Image 1: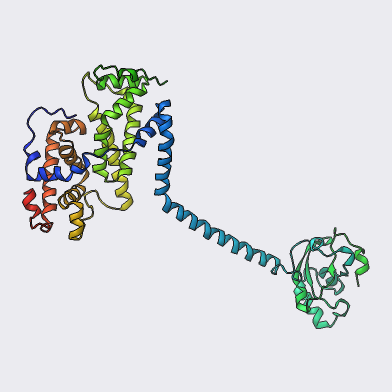
Image 2: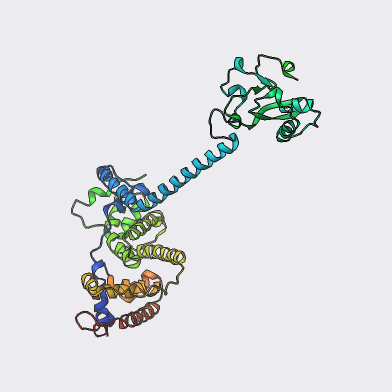
Length: 214
Length: 207
């Protein structure tokens, strides 16, 4: 499609020119794939119905090519996703263990509300809550359950509660104990024997709270 | 709205319409006229893109984008009767190739004229690839963009200096200067090559 009318420039046919044209010769027969026009036609809105049959086949070829080129990317994405799933699983498990204080065994403490631990209310014996006993011991409110437990052990005043295999921390409000108890010591600490559960406000019990106070 | 009135004109024996006519029809939404223009010019444009990028997928993408831009802007074009669309289409494509080259150089952190040196291949491999052709291609690839495009248009498309000047919208003297310095760099690059497998120096081929 050249519009050249005069003789070629001398640089065109000298040694370097001939070598350069020979080097570029392989490009003289290069042609784009049919998919290029089909993409142009589609994107410019000039696609004709007669192209639809070819579009199907070429679209598959286009997808194959794209997929082939993106295999490496897909592998990267898959590897990243696998690592992310593993990290999430490990983190969630660790987080669950930290929160629950145990590994989910039945005799281990749990953050679940006490009425959801599976222990039938009819079978439950009631143990004074930490705060209730703290009131009895005239300890200042806010004494930690661990401190209470140490004090209780050191004072030898453990008899009424033995085997005290589960120690719970109960959040306290202005009106007294509130919310769910947080287990601090599981039954496994005293041979796996199930200990009585503490009662909490709002928790269905077979005994009123006042009856279990010492 | 796209119409396809020229589809029948292609098969009725009449001479093909010139570029100005086709451009006017494309501007009115004639999809068949656009397809004729594509069939007329896609091959040389693709070869230019391939010579400049050396990557088939990139060359196809650039070709596609060039025609889409041409389709969008052809209504603004004032083409004299009988004039060719080729320089205008080539100009669009070359700008796209230039943009791609600049992005690639920025991504890879290298200057346009600081391309990797010619790769050393084993004699067997050089023989397989066509030794001279490979050396020439590598030397062309190592040229700065402005010299490379002139070399490609001059030696691949056999354009003369005036055609290249019209395509690039630069004076013919500038084209001649770029061609001169491009050839000098080519010769210098090739002179660094050891003697070819057949005992012939590349200097003797291009000197």
